[in-house]
Length: 305
Image (cartoon, rainbow, N blue to C red):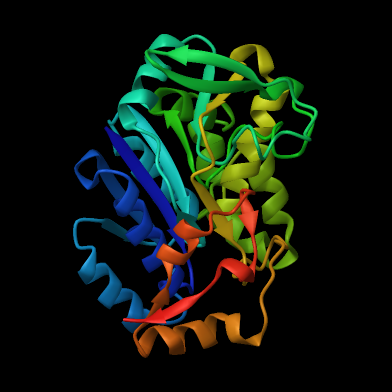
């Protein structure tokens, strides 16, 4: 039912926590996971992790755009759930409820997210509507009228379920599909490699929609949706906050992301801990549930297994 597309680089300990917590709260038999892995550091630790989760399909990134599109083109499940390796799940929503919500709200549901709750949005200024799905309550907000950066940002890679059909439509629509231009200006073309040292290739990618990193995979479809509001559904649905990004380090060099770590949270320090059999204590996170979709080191507790 679900294709889970996860992105990782230099974070085997955090990816381990992502996968362990995902399968703790959502049935593994409903999820087919693809891991797009940018190999740089800690190959040995990653390989051991991939052996542990050997049902996951691992793609070693050579060209992000090509690798991602190859995965997207073969996905035939009803839903896509994206993932980033520093996200941790600590609760769940019944997939039957999610599926029923999509079926009943097919014309106006953009996605069903695990990153919102009525409590976390109480001071946002957004109008929250309560909807009954069967015997359960779900909530929705109109992202097109969003009052905060989070609530007006509909396409994200952490913990939102999307119809595969919608994801493909948005991605394909935001790209220039002219085969000649794609050949000339594609991410692996001779011209692109020639101008790469100047930095101009990123402007070319943006012009033609050739996504070159997970950050751009999130921001460009989101931008396209905002520029084409009439072509996409109005509402983001949710029930409760079930997952958060625990942001203690940064691995992306092209986009600065907020993080709340110290020297003990560098990727090198955490990999040393991982080799010593330390793991993120997801039970601690579950017992002390974050109240925001992004949180810091107060939730990043390790335990020796």
